[in-house]
Structure formats: C-alpha cells, structure tokens
Image (cartoon, rainbow, N blue to C red; front, side):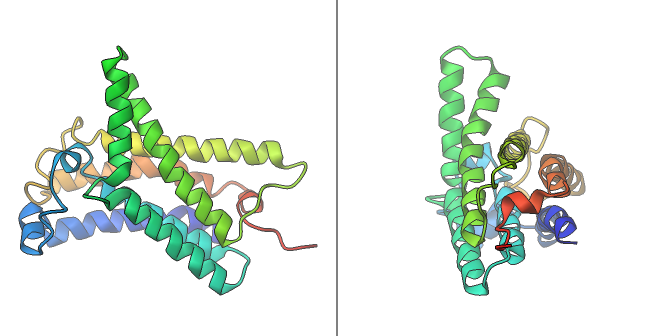
Length: 229
C-alpha cells in the first residue's frame, strides 16, 4: 500500500493542480490583482510556465516519503517542511522559475552557443535542473529516515537512484517543452479546454516514469531506514 501511495499521490496532486488552475481561470491578470505581478512575470515564466507543477509534484513526493519513513514524527515533519521549503525556493526565488529555470537556461543556452544542436542543448539544460530538483528530493528522503543501502544492496541502490534521476530528467525536459508543443496562451490567458488537456497530458507523460519506479519491489529498502534487526 505504501508503494502504491508513493507512486500515485504525487502525480495525482500535480493533475489536481492542473484542474484547479483550469477551474479557477488563473492567469497573469489575476496574479496582478493579487499583488503577485512583481513575482509572476518575465522571461522565465514564459520559458518554463509549468514549473509550478514540478513544484507541486516535488512537494507531494517529499510529503509521501517523509510520511512513510520509519522514524519519529518530529524528524519526519522537520524533513518534510525543510524539503518543501527548499523546493519552493528552488522554483520560486527570486521570481517565478527560480534557480530551476535559470540553471537550465544557463546550461542549455551555453551548450547551444558552443555549437550543440538545439535538442541536445535542451536536454543538457534539463539535466542541470534535474540535478538540483533530484538533489533536494534525495536529501529530504535521507533526512526523513533514509540511509545508504547496506552491503549487498549497493549496486541495486545505485541502479534505482540512477533510474529515479533519469526519470526526473525526463520529467523536467517534458515540462520545459510545453511551449514547443503548443501551450501558447497560459499564463497570458486562462487555460482553455484544449490547453488544459495538453497540460494534463504533459504532466502525466512527464511524471509517470518516476511514479512507476515507486512500485518496484524492495524500493523501500533502499530509500528508508530499515530498523535494526
């Protein structure tokens, strides 16, 4: 049950956020009316409009991992709050997109200017962003009660870690491709039904691989502390 929750809850949270954005009609005009205009604007918002959905997925993932950790609730609560706070800072500071979008843009644009093809530059930018995003998720899991895999499980642990990282790399690359795939109006205008379907499909395609890894048998052994036998 814990593996199913770990797999399904973060993706469900991200899809619920898409539905909430569509139902509320949230757009840049509403952000201005709420006094968020100085934060919800600019190049990185246009570059990576779906960064907020990566944040929702990441926070939900931290909450699930911390909630399922076999340690005391003060440690799990502290780890969950710290992980969520670091993710929020990564995505939202100093303005929308945060260091997540800025690091991806810096690496991707440098790669392109040094002669790499555009798809390769896009992949390298997503790789840089994934290092930061995955690093916070991993630190939060360790802080909540995680441990390095014991002797005899290290190769499997390394393989799972690389698979999880690759899945997050794919997820951020997919979300960053939203503009190229036709998501033009939002956040200049509210999500219409076609844009909502596109965003929901992108979110599902982006995060299904990472969520599916939580269903692998024995994964909990690698991610969380096994109590002393």
